[in-house]
Image 1 (cartoon, rainbow, N blue to C red):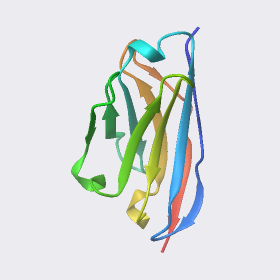
Image 2 (image 1 turned 60 degrees about the vertical axis):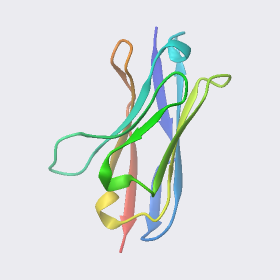
Image 3 (image 1 turned 45 degrees about the horizontal axis):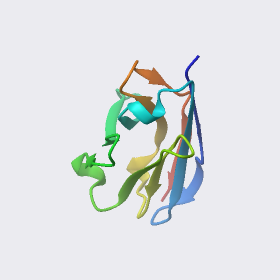
Image 4 (image 1 turned 135 degrees about the vertical axis):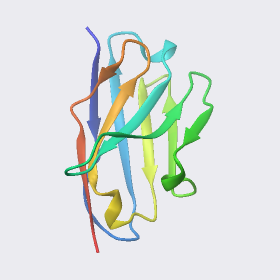
Amino acid sequence: QVQLVESGGGLVQAGGSLRLSCVASGGIFKISPMAWYRQAPGKQRELVATISTRGITDYEDFVKGRFTIARDNAKNTVYLQMNSLKPEDTAVYYCNSRVGDYWGQGTLVTVSS
């Protein structure tokens, strides 16, 4: 059974940093591209960043230069390093596996101004 478990969210001041982690179990991590999405209050879920199985990354424009996605296949973990955070980054952040379209439960990031 595939499970994705996010952690690392919290409250941070504008300009600060957080690192999110997502641990995958169930055997798909090494064969699956991974992604981070987010959903702000009252808004639709949106893609933030993706990473291929070989580590090729892609970012939405609103996080380019501030966020970094990375993966550690030995630890079945994908990360999202978030720097220069803004109040508009406040959202629940979700981990997604492209293979099987599995989702984690989300982790809340709140950025205060």
